[in-house]
Length: 420
Ligand code: NAD
Image 1 (tube, protein in one colour):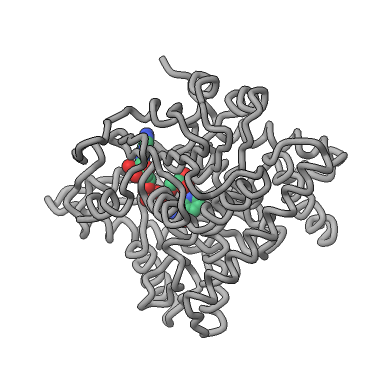
Image 2 (cartoon, rainbow, N blue to C red; image 1 turned 60 degrees about the vertical axis):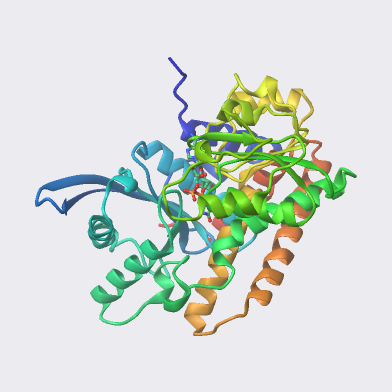
């Protein structure tokens, strides 16, 4: 039987280590070990066949010390409260590491969205929004898309919240369709951030972008965009995968062809992609394939202590949240691998979510170039700050990122003081 990982325990272990390296006393960071609020809701939905199904949902707020809570909503059949708590905490660290004025939160519904009709999905989303309504709002807690949710679902959340308020409140949620206050560049932002960060780390390591061999796990929003943009920058994408498995080609895959194959909205997955010269591989094989850069961009706990010793890539850029277990992280560090941690590598999404919220509350609309330029500036600045911490403390990039983030959260807490 495979080992069960508690992602919240993983988060705590990393947090404790960062606190020690920062020389913090327990009292200074004790509150960061806990989530501020956890809401569990039951969501009854009338199904198209007339039956009623009740789904379990959550919204967790980890920290509001630096601003409103911010974090996506996940629709997945296997989510549990510990996963949502860890994801919420990672959002606090992520917002702090890129220095945007937010704390962290996360929401989820235990559902396989692919099993629901569009009508059922809409009803589920509206009822879930109504149930978490007391916690969310533009100054309070701002959801966004995550695994299993998308712009259309964010539009339904915005509409439901607005109906309860009696006026349109675009700033309650980010990642919305452009037509109802979404930002240009938001859909590609996380993958674009992964590309910027990959470019920066390769530059620091004296490795060229052109011809660098990259493997990407997950061909969804993050992995698909990252693969496409890295391909455009001259990288050779040797392997990609999705939930059905992966494809490999030593001389490089045609990413445009793969994305158009997957994007035809016909339920096609990579196991159906049959092109001469392309070999089918498993997801385990994808992680251990011969390459220079590995981008895990699917789900958490993919790189385990079983897989870690077999990884050939010298650089791992974490597109997904929490793809590496603590045990695997230790093995990779021992093997001299450079890991750019999730809280930095995939922060592009929340940075452009922040831009979307800023545009919404100011009733402004930026053009895409402005969005991408501002994103690049923040990603490079944050990368440099983490790199400097890594050097100064002679530690890993993960620790460097947690040190930068925890320092900012703890300072905000200290300035605000304890109540009462
Ligand atoms: P998505 O639903 O668009 O795509 C997920 C991809 O992973 C799909 O290709 C799916 O087939 C694949 N997948 C699912 N289970 C898999 C498995 N067991 N093995 C291999 N592949 C599998 O999701 P996304 O938005 O791209 O998110 C991916 C990861 O990035 C998640 O960890 C998410 O939390 C994180 N993330 C997303 C964003 C964002 O803006 N979307 C921002 C930051 C972090």
